[in-house]
Image (cartoon, rainbow, N blue to C red):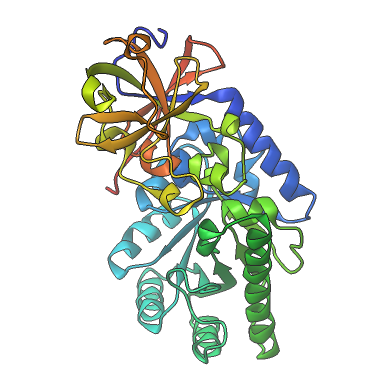
Length: 378
């Protein structure tokens, strides 16, 4: 098969670009003396995760229990479920543990801790736990200065069947940075707040061996990882337009694209219509806050090279509208009905979630593999 023969819209993955992206991050993190725990939520594919060097040794991160079960079934045993635990999911956690998995959960409240402790007691099985820290006001986690840090730390350390491992944080606000200096400052804030929490806990007599931090921007531009034991990140393996806007990568590093077909024109509006709408491209508008707004994706030619000025300006369920960002007239004869284009995504995770497989290429039109990926939660 090749890019001319498959149906559209289809998800295209450039294997060599993925390999380079992974190697670049692995080399950077290895020079810092910490472990890389790649996030499987971006790939949702064992074929992609097996491209890492010995990922089973350092462990992986997941965001759903379906991912945890899927990766465990393919040989990954050390798995961090990096979403705050809900009581209803604990039975699935223990089912995996009893099959031989080492699953670590995260939490940031006494209610979650009670549920985890009761379930561990019920199963009479030790459960590794990390406490989530809010390093930048982005989402969830305990305020580093809160008294809850020590209170919850003592509770977890004393619970009979809980194995308190340490602290975890995620610098989600790095995605809103303008410039590399801002990302570096955010990376240092992420590190220092997590390490400070470790020091507070240990000063209170609570062992805290693990300090887990990470986001693709801070992992890329972080220069000091003192006190950190592991770094989590995921988007870097594919990269996307948001990462390019943050200067984390170049446009040419983006490994993921959606193949679409021209199905019509609205010449009086200077529009090209394609068969990829929000169900294929997602509604993620992550570049809207950046210097260059790429709408719903950057338009590339069949080879994957960007076409200057063209982007997907609006989407409907199965239709996408391509326009010129400067309003220049598009030569419609260059985009006849049936011509195929490739769209680079704003957010690789969101766009890939619409598809069940990757059509894998190696820099040419030939499809060398089709890699399955998983979606959903059950």
